[in-house]
Length: 337
Ligand code: TYM
Image (cartoon, rainbow, N blue to C red):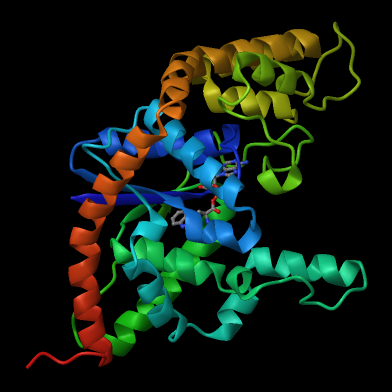
């Protein structure tokens, strides 16, 4: 069977980018025959950038409810909370000890923070914690723990997957002795989504505060957010540059190819931005409306989500515990008599 795995950091409210980039493709993948799917709430990752315990707890609930509302079947998928699997930080440490510091120096997220500091004449590492620096190693542990073949993610995660492969290869070379411990995982990226733009046209991201929330605030909040998407100043009646517009990129991420083509033609024929925004909201709503009720129902019953996550942790640990035993032995922490 093909193992598919992905996670979402529990530091914010799920947005359209998370949905189109990770949640929707991972649910589609989980429905294919011959697939074992592993999906999780990356709450250890959340600690790197969020020191508000309530926000982390709330975000975990929202993300779990979103995933289930969007169609994840917890009976079929192994669905868990990262911090319920103590083998993950243990593996993370083993991987940390075989990872070159130079590899981490090249990580985009770390480099971007350093560049920001330099731009404002601060110390290069000002405000950067070790969690951020070694973030990709924890992510490698998530993926390698369950030997995932495919990882459905947005484009921003490609480098992390490359690093995971590097780290896995290094571990295999050092300790494998003919048998590989780890599969080298591949990214799975939907080209029609790639990087979903946010309200201001930059990548939709919690850290840019430019997101369109999936369910929180209901359809009213979604429509209001879509109205705030930045467009150029072309008037109704004037032809629009559809391919270059964020509105079209968002529409394409939700529509069928033929719907997207017709939307593009209407823009090129002069549809006004106001009408285009209404059409975008309608199209997104068509997909989300049925899920929103399930979402609200789950949010009202956190204990049900907790039960699901506990069951998921049990399933996950039936795999992570024996692998960890083999790994402890491989590196010399244990010997079998
Ligand atoms: P996170 O929480 O930032 O984002 C979760 C997923 O959503 C995707 N995504 C987007 N896709 C398209 N357009 C966007 N604007 C957009 N914004 C976010 C992300 O690419 C991601 O797939 N490090 C990961 C979480 C993680 C993980 C893992 C993922 C931890 N361990 C192991 C895969 C495998 C993260 O912070 O994603």
